[in-house]
Length: 113
Length: 112
Image (cartoon, rainbow over all chains, first blue to last red; front, side):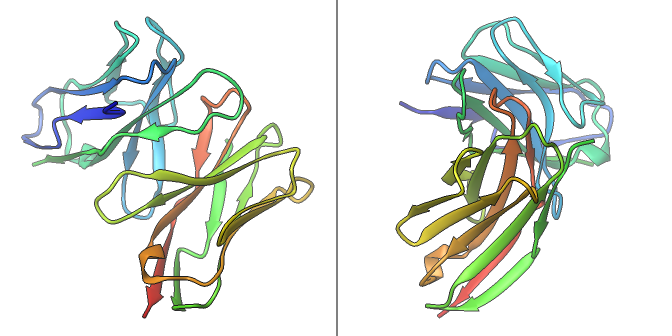
């Protein structure tokens, strides 16, 4: 099993450009999450999904959109990138049910110039 | 809103010493408390977790304690080794798991 796979691993964008980050998991997890990690601020939840076709806002959703058309995939979109969105983005997934830990991907390092 | 405070932000210990990281949470509905370790440039990985109906849990050199009344939980690492050097995150979530709040992280340095 590959676990949680994120693509791309690195990307540099210009302000105003758009892009989509892809997260794929092969563990049949119901829940999927997108976080951003900035120095000194831990992991902040952007959006999450509790199942195929569902999405919900997390702590810092502004400027991002998500889609979960297939259970195994969770896409994070930036419609008009801003320098404040320079960050490391982590996708995670977990089983449905009580007390389930999250499994993280390797992250995407995104720089907005 | 709900938050998790984590202290200290940086911790430096000599190899063989113990390390303690403390967290406080605000949401009284939280009942699951995982700890993640993130090595430089790597993904966060679960190292230990504790449920609200348990006061302490131990796994070899790592232990976690929980005080629900005070809303405190702590990570204890004994006999630290250089490979324990990493950033450690505490987190608090409800039983459903999709509402998880992470602490800001503690960077642990273990000096050989």
